[in-house]
Length: 123
Image (cartoon, rainbow, N blue to C red):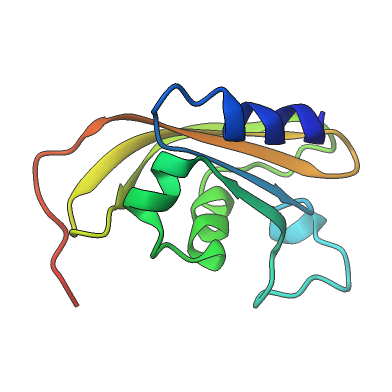
């Protein structure tokens, strides 16, 4: 499952920004004792368009997005949500994120849906 997700993001993106994360269970109640909040992702796979337009996003920020919608189920679908991500110019974009837990790893796919109308304030 993990390798298929990886290949899909790298080669099946069709020019669309896509990101995949492979992590432990994102829900705080289900995390392993050795969970490292500074390094929450085992893998972060970005399509070339995602890397070009959203390359400043940190894995910790993407993981926090996942935590915001995932439930504590022991397996299967953990949740799905439309989320806003800012690109390198500060413009916001709507992504569809979905996370599935195979009882070993949480597999998350986030793909670009559309631009959002209002920019994010630059910090």
